[in-house]
Length: 204
Ligand code: SIN
Image (cartoon, rainbow, N blue to C red; front, side, top):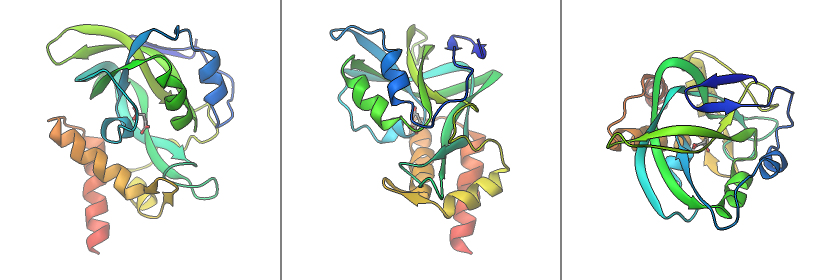
């Protein structure tokens, strides 16, 4: 087992192709008439292009949101990847986002959207009223080929300012996420520091 923190269990340790669609379809243990909670912490918060039955603010414990994943297919290209968020193990952290209750067949569409290195893994999530549920989230680990890893927030901001892909400007991904986190009254110093650098770079 590569890692485990409060409910999210990773079972993949081998180097993976950056296209994780087939892997996620293989690990699907849901029956067609099942429903599952999906925890979204990045673009899934603000770009909700999938059907869902319910949605609630939620959080997961033991993970931090970081702009450490490369994007070859949405906010960048294979030659010039963008930077998008993934979850990094961090025992003290709580990552806030939004949970969506979705029907099992929707995961095919979600697996397609998140195929650039993200694995669909099980997690425990806590809703705003303190109740808890098991569900799923997409995260990208250092083993995937699109992984970019840590950099200073200024370097990340510069990188984001220079990237764009089929889904649009990388800056819009960051700014839309920061806007959504504020609307949810969530603090995320990493995201807000990159946002501040981007605003400075845009003004310069
Ligand atoms: C997520 O939003 O939960 C996963 C990362 C992304 O698609 O931006």
